[in-house]
Length: 151
Image 1 (tube, rainbow, N blue to C red):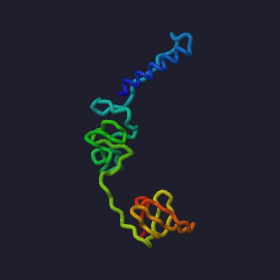
Image 2: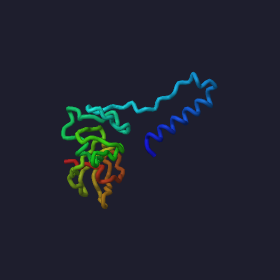
Image 3: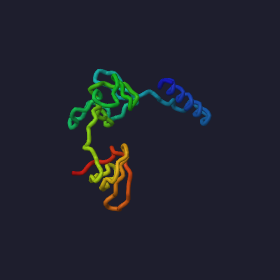
Image 4: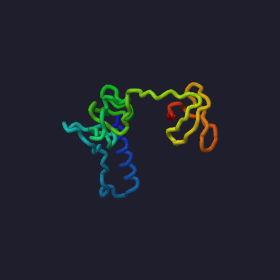
């Protein structure tokens, strides 16, 4: 169902509820459902699905734009489900290039990315790493990508 049909259906539902709620509908203002969005410099509107952070990349952001984001596919963002322009950027940008991490082996010291906990690896099976938390002594299991090898 297109956005326009959904907006029109929603508008009809709201108006119907308003008529049921208010006896004098003449004094009840008509709701506005038009997209009051932003526009590109050439006057074309941006898609309403795009976040407010969508725009030309900030000066402190280098080498990041829609065209080298993992969500970009032929002028379309699969994250926001919206058409985009290749030179634009948003805060959800993710690199299309995989950055290899140092391999983690048994006995290595690691830091869990989310919690910041530090420990030592005791076993690795496929992508699951069992490790001992240095602070609590508990054996924890994490996905390999959630751990950083410490020097």
